[in-house]
Length: 214
Image (tube, rainbow, N blue to C red; front, top):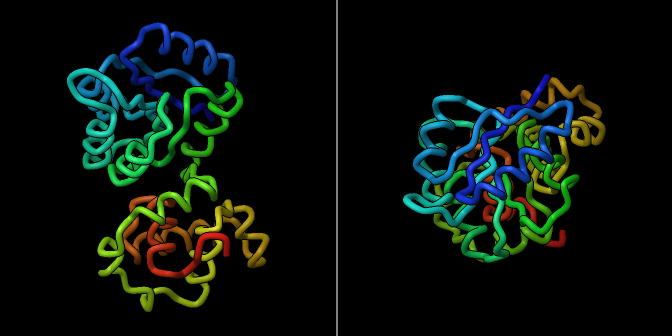
């Protein structure tokens, strides 16, 4: 099954470069290109690609505002791709509903793998990035979350999920089938009010379910 990607970047040469890289992959297709945030929102909600590859700094509407609108409209997963390794971009992107954050100085292999990860519903957060997020995010966002709504098994799934485990790794650790794990993950997200796995990781750290370096 092919993964469809919308490219959102105000530089034509950058979009062309990404298109060339992605179209070399058998399982990835480019659904369209947007030159600014307004176009990105419109095309994301109209074309419904699997992933939006979103630049941050664009004219008219920046990538963070576009991500926020796409998330509010129940749109596709957004992978932020930027030249700048800035904490404020990272934190604002996650608050806006992005599922991943990647720098443009990475390799083509890292880009295509990131797209596959985000398209599968996984969060693209390395442990080091997670620690940066947790040190900055404030606790009030987690104040209304009731951990006692989780069953013991769902609590185990949340701990493993927060540690960066994939569904396959969770299944192996808990001796469950992957279909069962997917069901548990969906219920965990619903019960703690997380839009996706990225937000579940953030909430898990804020609530003290897991700790950085633990």
